[in-house]
Image (cartoon, rainbow, N blue to C red; front, top):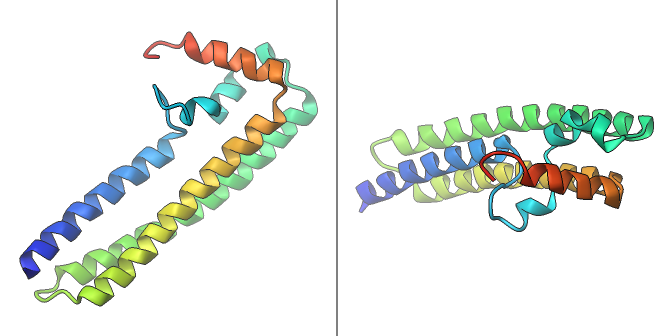
Length: 147
């Protein structure tokens, strides 16, 4: 039974790491209707001239991105620390289930906060764009290869 718990925890750690990498890659893409509702900051900045961004919009986006990047970096370090603690717990010959689950809760909480911060940024970016700019971005995104 303990071995099954260890195998499950190791599998879960890999799944969490994969999901973190996916979360850092940017908003969901492809056929995901939720992901299609937002615009990657890179897409906005790469097309700022075509979108006719105002100086105020540019300044706002730069400030939001700077603030988000600082927060993401801090959260990533904290998440790595919590993941290391969880790995240490499950490496022992006998794994304390309560301690493992409590540490897992910390990891999941950090991951949730990262995703929450990411979605918050995407909402702020979208809300600062005019409907016309959003329509242009939708069109640009639909013409990108792999879509």
